[in-house]
Structure formats: structure tokens, C-alpha cells
Image (cartoon, rainbow, N blue to C red; front, side, top):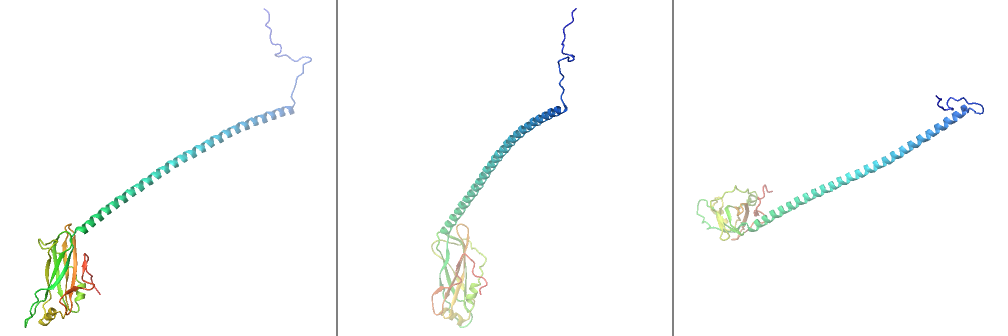
Length: 269
């Protein structure tokens, strides 16, 4: 059997005419240095490409974050504007409701003021001046006439009336305290006619009575009218009139004693 041809180059010892090339140490160092530089350059290029990709990714992340933040800010700003608008709308609605309520109340009050009863003392006169007997004390009296100048009747009308004279009369009238309300049953004053009551002085001597009747001494008649209107609201009217010396007529007291729906002065000077 013939031998199979083999590879003559394997294990062949170089013969004559063939040279063995051997690298010197410097060549090896140069080659290794070149390989190292090539490797470093390739590494730097890879790192540069990675850095560029990271920079691009970071840029996209920053842009994405900025867009997201803007979107969220825009959403919150829109929500804030909507909330402010809703709050303003609610405030405007409340204000409109308050104005409407106040307008309604003012309209109702105006209607009540226009339609209610208004009572006041319209006139005063001496009522059957008493004669002065030779002995004993008498009372001097005057009538007070109250009328209704409103548009509806007054209910529960009561007239408190007093007669006074002397140097302390004005002070006494100014210090008057309104009596507790007292309503007689069925006491109504409509738009026609009047209601009257008689005011009496304290018991006086004959000479004093004569002076009051003759008008040589001033006589004051004062008091308060208490009543309810048809809307159930309570009212008061103060009155004061003076019969001046040497006059038969009563005139309104100057600057005191007459008032409407308020308390008279207390503790005057």
C-alpha cells in the first residue's frame, strides 16, 4: 500500500537558501506600542461614541422633563384659573344673591313704610276748665287728640299723657321714660276720626289753678302714643305741647319732647 502524501511544509526544517526571520526586541516593543496605541484609540472612539449617545439621551431626557414640567404647569395653571374663575363666579353669585336679598328686603321695608299707620298728636285744648272753689285743691286738665295719617289702621293704640307746670317742667319732660306697653282690648285707630285722652295736673291750689286756666302760668302737656301697625311692628310717637303765658293756644315745645320711633333723651343736662 502506498504511503499517503503529506504536507511537506509541516515540520520541515528550513534548508539551504531559506532564512529564518527573527524580530528584534525593539521591533517587538514598537509593534506592541503600535498595538497599544491602536487599542487605546479604538477604546477612546468607543468611549466617545458612548459619551455622545449619553449626551443625546440626556438631552432627550432634559427636553422630555421640560415638556412634562411645562405640561404639568400648564395643567395646574389651567386648573388654578378654573378654580379662581369658579371662586369668582361663586362670589359673584353670592354677591348677586345678597344684593337681590337686600333689594327685596329694602323693597319690603319701603312697602311697609309706605303702607303702615302713622299716629301723632294733632291738637291739644283745655277740657272743661274747672272752677276754683273757695277752698280745697283741684286738677287742671287738657285733652290730647291723636290721629292716623298713614294708609292702614293702627292696632292696640294707647296714649300716655301728662300735664305739668313750673320751672322744672322742661327737665322733667326731657327725662321722661317711656312706660311699659299696655294695649287695651280692641283699641284700633283707622284713617278717619281720632283717639283722645285727658291729661291732668297734680292737685293744685285755687290760685295756681286760676293762673293755669288764665294762661298766666305756662302749662305743658306731653306723653307718648304706643301702637302696632298691620305688619305687627311696634311704634312710638312722643309729643309735647306748651300753653304759653297769656295765650289760649297750645304750641309745639321748642326742641324737645317730640320724637318718632325712638326713645326720648335720657339724663339731660
